[in-house]
Image (tube, rainbow, N blue to C red):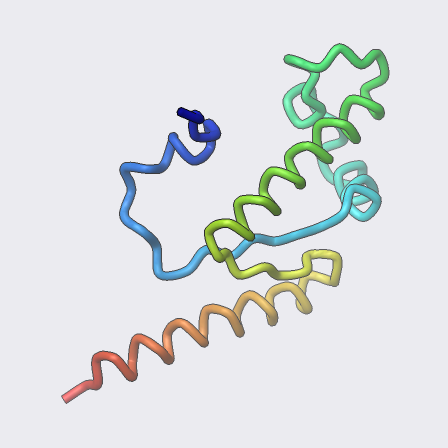
Length: 113
């Protein structure tokens, strides 16, 4: 019998949410954003388990693995995917639209009155 991936088994006890939004980004866009904010940290670079010498190479390898895993989870579980490569206002607008869709659906299921 195949084991569940760790991320899935961690949350299997939790109720199914009404909405899960995955902010998808590519590593090439992520790198300058990280460098402008915190820089490459030990944990975000996967240096706790990768045996790559360069912090940059480790970051790219680890983040690529994470992005692939989250994309698989999004496809498997029907997460709403928002392209996070845009500006903050663009991403916020896309996230807001996804939330609004769910809220409208809830309102039609449970009309006030």
